[in-house]
Length: 239
Image (cartoon, rainbow, N blue to C red; front, side, top):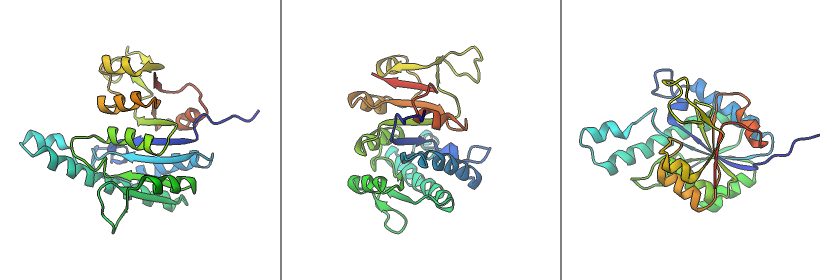
């Protein structure tokens, strides 16, 4: 019997480090191609894919803040770095045959479309992958919050947080081998336990709008496809 998709439109939240070289910084074209392969795999199932990507591989605002940098300036620098990552990802996807559009919350017409909600939805309806750069366009908000906001604006069925581990644990599984993975959490549990799923603003936004969050390991070849069919994978955060 043919399996049925549980999610038909997704917002995929990637960290900047997902594009980085082994030292954690910069943009590695091979990693961009690896992500493009995974996106292409699910796109061929007929799933609408929008992506929000971070900037930690190019700029860490915390290092500037520690030296007394203005918070807004540090945040704007991070937003610009997300557009660089978006362009690198777009290039890898288009070389694979995926029609891709980059939209930026900070207008820069020479390299990206401005973010317009209805246009982003139209691109998805036409089968294009949409990469949403520039965060929310405002300082003091993380790319986690941008991902939650954009997911609701485009009518995504789920917000998928792609990480290097296979879900959310009660402690760091790298330093604590005995750590326990959660298969399911509520928004309130996630906030009360201060689990590092996403920041509190993003989780609260998802909770207020009943948007599921799924945390999974992007580098597990089958995880994303399994998630789309509703198979048990990663950690699901719901009401």
